[in-house]
Amino acid sequence: MSDRLPGFSTLAVHAGAQPDPTTGARATPIYQTTSFVFNDADHAASLFGLQAFGNIYTRIGNPTNAVLEERVAALEGGTAALAVASGHAAQVVVLQQLLQPGDEFIAARKLYGGSINQFTHAFKSFGWNVVWADPDDVASFERAVTPRTRAIFIESIANPAGSITDIEAISTVARKAGVPLIVDNTLASPYLIRPIDHGADIVVHSLTKFLGGHGNSLGGIIVDAGTFDWSTGGKYPMLSEPRPEYHGIRLQETFGNFAFAIACRVLGLRDLGPALSPFNAFMILTGIETLPLRMQKHCDNAKAVAEFLAGHSAVASVNYAGLASDKYNQLARKYAPKGAGAVFTFSLKGGYDAGVSLVSKLQLFSHLANVGDTRSLVIHPASTTHSQLDDAAKTKSGAGPDVVRLSIGIEDKEDLIADLEQALGA
Amino acid sequence: MNHDSYPDNYIRSILNGVKSIAMVGASPVNVRPSYFAFKYLAQRGYDMIPVNPGHVGKDLLGKPFVASLRDIGRPVDMIDIFRNSSHIMPVVDEALTLDPLPKVIWMQLGARDDAAAEKAEAAGIKVVMNRCPKIEYGRLSSEISWMGVNSRTLSSKRAPAPTQGMRLSLNRMSVGGGDTAASDRAAKNKSEQS
Image (cartoon, rainbow over all chains, first blue to last red; front, side):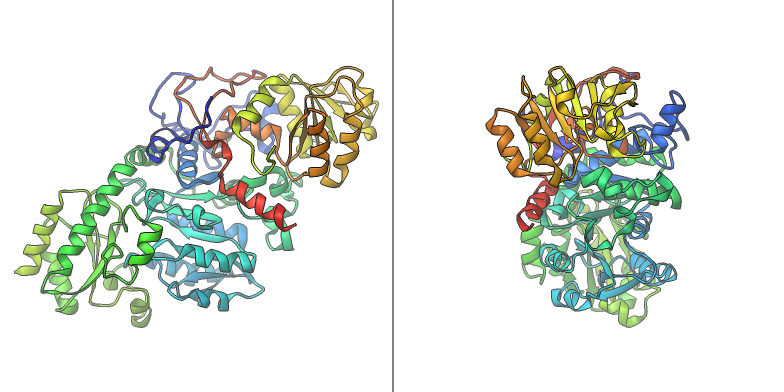
């Protein structure tokens, strides 16, 4: 029984999964069931009262999903995780534990367009007030802190331009303010960046992207770093106060350094309901087994494509942190030395029309609204993912009208470059 | 002993080694953490003894309450203290009067008294602070994985199908022993600040 630390690729294959006790099945079985029988009334009561480990109902937990949860928790270096139906669901569940109506959270202005919408409109209707800050200006986060601030939210590699966020600097602001730092690590995956190592208290993912990696299954996950003390200052009553629905249990007192993940499960998922299908969990788990191989290929291909585009006469500029000339290259070298991800933007000298023409001529790149697929993808954010923002907000979030976003897949890079060359040249 | 984080082997050897556990501060109220830790450890085969002077004459899951450690009247391997940090020292002082001495003194999640720990260790007693034996047993056996918790262990072996009341193997490969976990670093920083 050595306490030797296994490497990332070993964890990607093994963490959370062992042969099925009943059948010996080595791959994780798909427990496609809504419910689980109780041994007796006492067992049922213990499970409902959070006193025993076990399964009740798939909206609250499922054995297939549990393997996925432990696997991602291990890869991120967290104490526990909770899988949910989508990345958006993860964000709702996280903030429900942290904010009461009238409270605020600070979010980086450069985010996935869907998150900007969710924060601006849906969360506003819950009374959760977003205050925007500039991820390139750490002081803007400090200035945004008020007595009602309950969390800070950033992306590690930010949509759509693949810019790198200075997680450590912003975590210092969060610690000083006494609030948790939430990092959306979707575009990096834990293979490139482990935000908890840089001061994140909570990590969220859209599993739909690089973790699942094959563009076939939606999912989201919340990872608890176990680093935040929820008991001080009375700011987080969901965790620190007795819960009437669980006979007065205090979650932090009872569950210690994984209390936040438990709160997300037994107060968030249970009551809001965005459970992940066990089938999707299985598909995503299968994807994660090859995450290290895929992610390295994604990054190597992306760098080659970015270099090609940077040297092309029709291209005005390329925003890829992996390029030595990029303004985020220093941060990329610090936070993501294995590669700067595979999602980036570039702009064409021919503006909006040239972007539309490029998208229509590409043969291998698929024109669709996703990232992190094995296939290479292209989109014009201004008319799609960021279309609900006004022009100023589009430009501020890096999605101006002349910008094209690529998500580079794991095909042969020569074929991707040839496709771009023919589409740009003609 | 560094009490900011514990190697898995340390916790594993304690939970594999002890048979009887006296729980100081055990509560008969079935929503208190001490109640369900007591129940869980009893179900996993430990010989549990509830210690709480307020409940003498009653029993907890069939085990009679005793008022103090001295009233147990037989050797006990481990003392699990379910009291706040400020109430630890008198319990440790009492434990040090027992003959034979207990092998382990365990302080619950949230409880830590470094002076008491030092005193116990000077007498040759192993000490664990700010941990829950139920959580650690569930983690090292990976039973806690049902709740999405990172057990920080791996195994390619087929475990026996669990039945009620069985002991589970804790002998899984550890993922780093917790020495560098972010949660442990946070706990250390907190104890340095306070």
